[in-house]
Image (cartoon, rainbow, N blue to C red):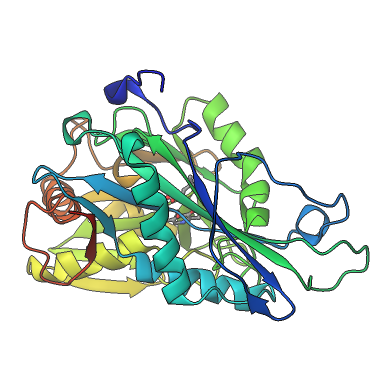
Length: 340
Ligand code: PLP
Ligand code: COI
């Protein structure tokens, strides 16, 4: 294996030794297979290629200072993948199968789990695709479920440091009754133009409003939004955003820290009133927001005039990563030790 400069890897793709696979055929899941191939053999008429019958997940394994390897809330990712399967008419991967495959793939790729000190982690990417060859628009009969892994560094440059975001009004990533609440590739295809536009202008990410009225905050690229004011953690309630496992965890941690927690519609003008704001997700962890610019109104909502993450975001971040790394007691039973 080539030496990896763990402390300097980005959020990219480094192939690893093994992935695990399971096939749905004749109405049932088969045995778990271990593969060292990084490619798949797929019909050119597979439904995933033409009609977007594809779903994915994202979770991480952490090499902890006590030498153990932990995975964070994998049952939540299993449940969300099941919801996505119902959303685009695919068979559900049972939680036991999902968690067994997570454990297997982490153990098989132990060499690729970055050291604690590097700040990098092992990202797990579960992928479920329809493989039946057909050209009619119907759900496939056959499916392939894969989990592969890749070591990753921070999603946004600098990790836990503030960066600027920009409101996009010209592009929507999802519709109120569409697939925004599911983790399907089509949502990400729909986000590429806005994301490219935001990057071209020097922003770290695009910021979405609700597609119907363009009045309320939805989410930030591939992460949920939260704002802090008056000792309250506020996060959007919307049918077109992904229910984030990280956000769900932060709502609990905020409550544990004595904050009020509100999940509700957030009108864009309310941004003015937040003392701190952040993007949160598995890849983003907490990415504190420096400011959000709205080119249409010319407004700039600034949360970090000194460029530094706010005190509550910092406490939430510390608390979250301390649990993920087994440093603080895991009182909510969120982590699973995969390697002792
Ligand atoms: N929103 C979108 C669109 C995402 O892709 C992600 C990443 O998974 C999130 C939010 C954050 O979700 P989670 O915290 O479960 O990773
Ligand atoms: C994640 O946070 O796991 C994501 O899926 C974000 C992105 C890489 C799509």
